[in-house]
Length: 267
Image 1 (cartoon, rainbow, N blue to C red):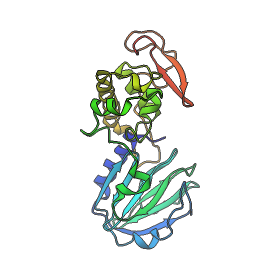
Image 2: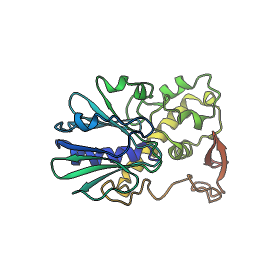
Image 3: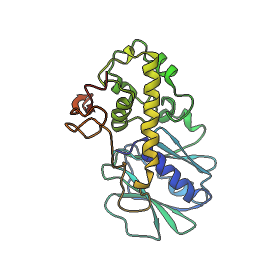
């Protein structure tokens, strides 16, 4: 599943390529993804110009002047920026065609993505209103996490994956962040000290920023899409040597998700 770094890399690439471009046509090949796809996109968007592209959590927001195109990639979705009019494949559901001859194609085999049209303040929309602070901004820090964790008995890994606590931390980066912070993933969130919360906030930011820095592995314009950098400290490495102490990494399941950690380094 595309996580926050992959969505941010996509946003930055599309911002460079599409801001200032005008929609000329929208081709819809489905009526519903996770939510219904508005049929009026075919009449609303042509003639509008992309003024900017923002991100909230794992959602992309295209500022189209007087309204916003909201896109969520779901579990298997990605966007291709293509030249000309290549024939669509089975899972190529939507084409956004621009005045420079290129098209932005939404591909989603499992149809768990979202493409909707918003007016007014997009941050007040039900899909976005409950999302917590962005982890790459100053609003996210140890003091915030410490206050939010008071009295919470849920495992800290599940807690930071809750989008109402912090935006965009999925399973992959939760594993990595907790290792960087040296915190066991199954500890109760409410047991964390202020210092540990500060280290956790730093770990979350470092895990996300490190992956964004590897963004060259995510190729928006090509058919082959690599979502993640190639090397992780713990994710997917059960039984391998801990990069700090050298002991084998352990794996448990939390909330139905694989969770890899070091039983020695993480307390």
